[in-house]
Every structure is written in C-alpha cells, then in structure tokens.
Length: 331
Image (cartoon, rainbow, N blue to C red; front, side, top):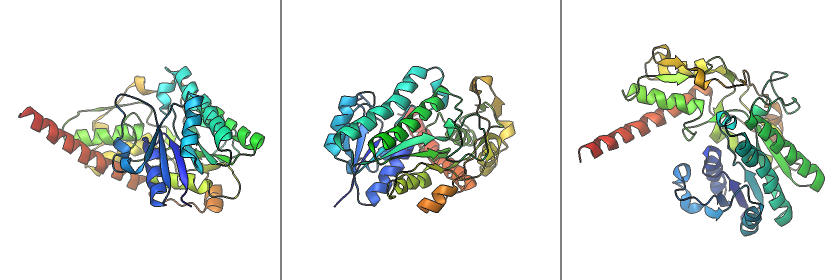
C-alpha cells in the first residue's frame, strides 16, 4: 500500500526537502496551505504538481480536522510555525497562537480523525536558550530565552502529553540550526550569503549584523529531514536531538562566506544594535548520539560545504535577478 503523508509548513525550507524525500520514497504527499491571494510556492515549484494541496489554517481546528479526513495520512509532519525568533518579541501573541497552540490543534485533529497516524512535531534547540549544560541532549532541561522558544517548549510538551495520555505515536525532533539555499532571508545564514553575493557583484556596500560571538550548531536541512522520517519508522515513539555536534560563531560564518568569494568580511560588516536580541542565546551545541545510535542517522554536509553551497546559489540567483532588471531597464 502506498503511504500517505500530510505536511504542514510544506512550502518552507524543511517542508520542501521533506516533500522531496517522501515523494522519492513513493509516498502520496499532501500539503496544508493557507488560503492567500498570493501563495508562495518558490521552494516547491519543481514538485508542486506532485503534491496534493489541502486548504487549512493552524489556528482553526475545524479546517485541520477536514485536512486530516481528506488526506487520511499514515504520517503527519507538523513543521509550520512562526519560526523567526527575532519576530517573536514584537509579535508574542501571534507566535504563541501559531507556534504553540496550533500544535494542540493539529494533535487534536489527528486524535479525532486518525489516531493511528504517526505524528512528528518540529521542536527546536531554542528551547534550551540559556543552556544549563553543554552539549545539550534529550534530557537537558529547557530554559527558553524568547517568546518563540517558550512557544516551542509548549509544543514539545503537549506532544509528549498526547503520547502519554492517548497512546499516540507522537514524537519530537529537537533540531538545532539547519540551513540551506532555501532558508528565508530573515535568518542570519541566508542574510549573510545573500549579502556576500550582492557585495561581490557590486550591488550592496555593507552588511549590518548583531552579535558576532554567538555560537551555533549549524547543519544542512536536507540531512535533517531524513531524521524526521526515520523517527516515524521506529517501533516506539521517542524524542531525538538532531545536530552536528560542532559549534561555530557568527564571525566564522562571515569568514567562510566572504573568503569564498575572495573578500574580507571586516571590510564590509557593520555592527548594529538593532540586530542584537533583547535576551541573547549565546551557545547552542547538540549531542546527537541517540539519533545516530537508534536511528542510524548520518550527516552528509559539513559546515564549510553548507556555506559554500548557499553562497553559490545566491550568486546564481542574484546574477539572474540583476540581468532581468537590466533587461527591463532597456525596454
């Protein structure tokens, strides 16, 4: 029998890579989308016709019940969220509704319509926040430092609660920072690689940044979605940390990205207090021992390779955009 999967947040970075993976494995893939006048399919444009689209809203339980009924999924991947940490301070209520309470909505829809479906919740390393131990593993206590982190803690624990209360196959992947050429421009990695491309091509003069000493555990999103799938193939539902086990500063990110195109980041980067978080998360480093041992999960893309991949893609995109703009000016 062909497996069926329902993915929320399918047009985002992780959702697009996960959809590719599941389609390659022969799944029938359903994607939840909000009704908007201008939906953005950029990340899934190459597979858009292979996805079965269902309209729904994470804040509307009735629409989620209908989505689960229509897709009749074997697996549900709840990836949708207000996922930009910086935006969670000026929009704490929205973040709470979408990143926290919507997890309950999704779990309820599954419990009511398809309780045998296996459920994956996208948890986050931001739940560790002001870390109490390093590296962080599945048993490390949470200490979130943003409304986003707090919301993710709620989503994580309500998933555990449904697993224990209703005997659902529900698990969470505590994913550390994972990036790709499909990452949104508001995230620091993509902000850097896009700026590097524009500066190299003479279209931008400087890059304004916040704290360069923050330490992060950065991996490739394409590797991390494989771990999501593996979690739902196990005999028992458990939570897993997914990470590289390596730390790099934002300064290292800048050095790798700028030097790749023959530039010195110090000539272009300006520190701007506007980009410093009200409550900073200084250090995140994951211990993925459990995932490697129990899931057989492996990393394929290293930090430098990831940054170079992103710079290459942004150079290609920015060149194409510039050529198009020049062409428009001559007509």
